[in-house]
Amino acid sequence: MEPSEETSPLAGDNFLEVPTSNEACEDEEEVKATFKPRFSPLPRRRSSVSSDDAESEAPSSVARKVSFADAFGLDLVSVKEFDTWEITTTSQNDTFEDELKLVDEFYLLSRFEVPSREEVLQKVHTQKVLLEAIEFLPGSASLSGIIRVLNVSFAKLVFVRMTLDDWLSYYDILAEYVPNSCDGETDQFSFRISLVPPYLKDGAKIEFCIRYETSAGTFWANNHGNNYQLSCHKKEAAVVADKESEDISDAFKKSCLKTSQR
Image 1 (cartoon, rainbow, N blue to C red):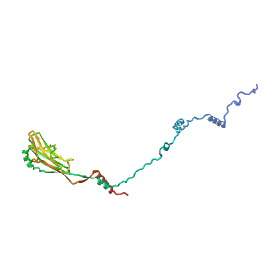
Image 2: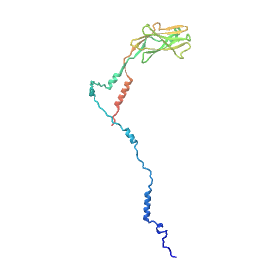
Image 3: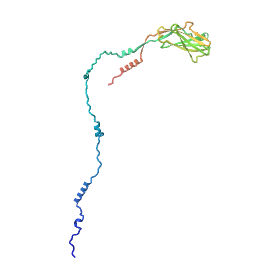
C-alpha cells in the first residue's frame, strides 16, 4: 500500500512558535499601555472663602453725597478772639514769704501766791480745802492745779468755779481725784483751766474759787475772799512756716545743690 498524499490536519501553522525578542518587547509595551497605575489625587488649595461666599460678601457700592455748610446758609469759617494777659512771674523766695504766718502766742500770770506744803497741811484741818499748787503749761494759756481736801467723808466732790466776766456768768469744772494720794487724813484732786477764743486775748482776766462738797457740808477756798485771779498776756508775734512750705523749701535747696552730670 502506498502512503497517502493528503496533508495531515496538524500542519506547521498550528504549532506554537517561540516569539522573538522584538515581539516580546512589543507585547510588554502593549500591556503597560493597557494598565494605568492609580495614584492618590493631588490636593488642591482652596481659599478660606468660597467663590459663592466671596460674591455674597462683596461690599456693594454706596453712593455718597458731600454737602457744605454754605449750602445751608451757614458760615464756613468760625473766628474766635482771645484777650492776652500778662503772666506775673514770682520767685521761689517770694512764695515762701507769702506762706509764712504770724502766730500769736499767749500766756497766763497769777495774781496770788500758794502757801507752802507745811502751811497747807496745817490750814487744811481748819479750812477743809486749799489750793496746794499750780503749774503753767508752756506754749499755751493753760494752768493745771492741785487741791488738797480734808477727808471728812468717803463721798466727796470738788469743783472749780471760774468766771471770765466778773461773775456775770461762771463755769463749774469738776476736779479729778489723784490716785494713791490719800495719806489717811487728806486727799488730792487735780484740775486744768485753758483759755480759748474768743476769750483768748491780751488783758483777759480769770477768777476762780474752789467748792468742796461732802456729806458733812460744803466748804469753800477763795483766797481769803479775794478769789484766785489770773491774767492773760500776749507774746511777741512769732513767725512760723507751714509744714508744706518747709518741705518745698528743703526740696528746692536740695535741687540747687545737685551737681550737673556730664
